Length: 274
Ligand SMILES: C[S@@+](CC[C@H](N)C(=O)[O-])C[C@H]1O[C@@H](n2cnc3c(N)ncnc32)[C@H](O)[C@@H]1O
Image (cartoon, rainbow, N blue to C red; front, side):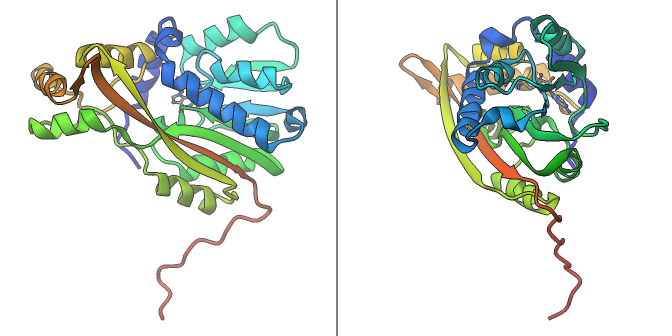
């Protein structure tokens, strides 16, 4: 269980609803990669209906699902202003329901052919219980496809914070192997599992952190970084990670696709002898 303040996460994403699309360069690419993976693995994406999308934000992935003919389902987000944006964009479409929903814990009186989510699960406090709950909401053999930012993301920021002796001003991201373990323990197959880095250039560290704020991915820690500490980290970042056209920030995305197994995998019994 990670020490995340969900109220801060929701408030930051709600504040970012109007600035998200312009700043979400890596998230847009993630959504494209996830959609391409589904298209590659599923001969007839329309057969996945009805789908449930978790953490839809402004609808970057939703657009791609519609493009591939997956047009019947429920599109959700936990942040009210994001849900308003989704309603404006997709509310008039027959076959699509837009609603507020916390992907970590929800009960919907319906089962889905697919659950999809782009760049969202890194905001969950834990993975196993949410994945088990998603499994309960899937038809037998149903598809779970998602991508999330994992450990390795913002390694330059972590290095700069370490170098000036300040705590890392972000939350701990899941490691890729934690995600694989949770998938298997929750009762899914893992049919695709691959990570990739996206290095992005920003004019300087301050502009990088501003862009993170425009996406809504600001500090979710119970105790946010003090302004003095942040200034020291920014100075060090600008010094250590400068290149000809600015500074680099690396994002690490994990792309996962699996299916609901008919019976959940038995848990390891660590108390067994021999
Ligand atoms: C980085 S955005 C990704 C949005 C969209 N999927 C995309 O690809 O652009 C993360 C989204 O997850 C939402 N979110 C965060 N925690 C969530 C939760 N527990 N349940 C549902 N949505 C959540 C945020 O409100 C935000 O809209």
